[in-house]
Amino acid sequence: MTNTTPRTLLLPALLLCAFGLRAESGYEAWLRYEPLPDAVAQTYLQTTGASVTLLGTSPVLLSARAEFLRGVRGMLGRTLRQESALPPLGGVIIGSLRDIDVAMPESQLGSLPDEGFRIKTVQKGAARYLVVAGGAERGALYGVFALLRKISLREPLSAIDEQQSPYAPVRWVNHWDNLNGSIERGYGGSSIFWENGRARSDLTRVSDYGRLLASLGIQACSINNVNADQRMLSTELLPDIARIAGAFRPWGVRIAISIDFGSPKSMGGLDTFDPLEPRGRGEAPPAPVALTWAAQEVAKLPPLTAKAPQLAWKCSGTHSRHRRAAV
Image (cartoon, rainbow, N blue to C red; front, side, top):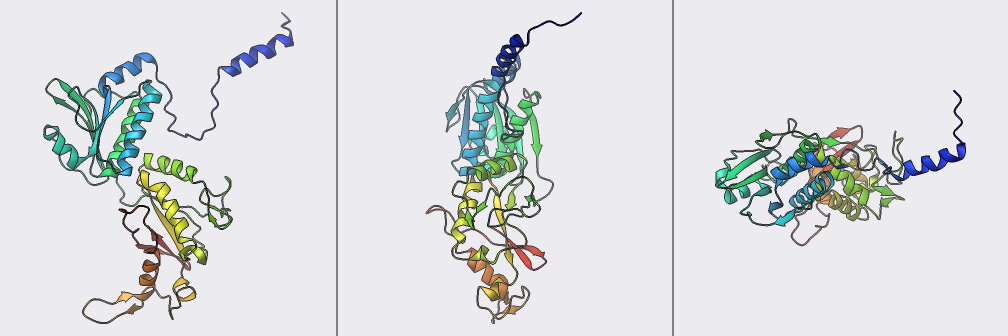
């Protein structure tokens, strides 16, 4: 039988279907938090309760709470009430192991490494709490992402008691981004960090990238090409590096920078750039002169707030003529 449906009728039908589709750019990656069916959502809402309590006020803990609220709103269709103290009717509790032990001694969470977490259902009288405890703030953030992942995969939570710790103590991603915005061996567009020799004015994508990294338990990110530009430790660029570090900081992600191996001599005016050549006298072991100079340069990074400490330095090895610093 021949299909005689007029083509003029097909076009409006296709347009009507398109209106019902949601644009998907891929920007949210695996953190889209698509709505769950109502029956499934109601089951989880019985476990999470109507509130989320945050024990602490650090930027990383605030990110953990914001992420949980975002995930619950997206997947379960509810905006939870925010609390700063233990609510009598139960709910979700997020915080460090130390703070939760003080607020809920009956939780009996045991010990955790700083970046480990435990998700546990705790009964206190008639109230039921879903506790997300981290050994420290970064562990609590990882625990929140793990809990949201379980909800998205429709895993049971009613009697959960699960503990996880990172297998590897160092978990970095490596970028070969140049200050002009190009990326060596990069085929996915321009750098999200650099443009025209400086940090980008808008670092929103850096913050969003930090969120993706944290969701995988990645704790650091190198932000420039290992074939380093000498200007990476220049006075002009250090505030830009601090801005990038500030965009990552709420997600517990530190940054690493590659610096030119010869910088202590070419920029610092030293007579050597040998990282193993010691200088100094006295009872204390002499410090390697080149590493000491580089550490002093990194220490010039301005704190982002009056209470923020100076960013830390450590050498993590060499690559050809270049050295990497973590801040």
